[in-house]
Length: 229
Image (cartoon, rainbow, N blue to C red; front, side, top):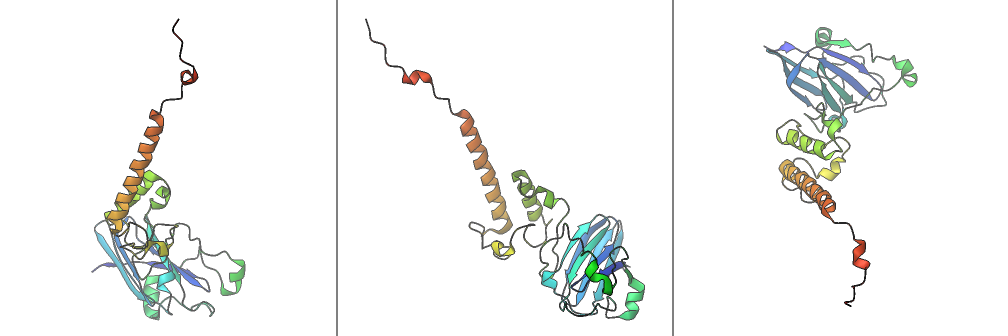
């Protein structure tokens, strides 16, 4: 029987911010639908889980999450954003008393929302598209550098990145994961992308090497031939 994962929450009129606190989390799995959140993970030899139904519906495709060393944070977008604050997080009032607490660091009163800051979404991924998407720690720091792209592709191929485009990449350019048919030459999915990046790096290094081997022009080429006396 897994341990119940504790949840803290706060909200704005358009979204809910959840924190599932589990220290040294590994083997995590997060599945979000329009009315439910299912989480499983490990900490040491202990299993943790939660299976909750929200008070109202959300938009799973526009929601996202990220994994931190001591927790999982989720930004859950409400389906109806113009209504009043939810009176509670869960549909089951009794379950909420035992499993959910208010995140006072992010809490704002409904009457003071206009004066409060929004949620900090730094490091969050793109749209969840139903489940298991986020930004694995360390990926964002490597994007944009050729060596970093190679490392990112290794993590993608080994399962370190579950689904979704890299941070900052328009999902429409990916042609729908995992095949990524929308990008030229990407029919092979992750392996095809990895091969493309490796080839780009090889071509770039070859170009730099060729430039270094070129001999400078010699002024002797402009001198006329000497006449024999």
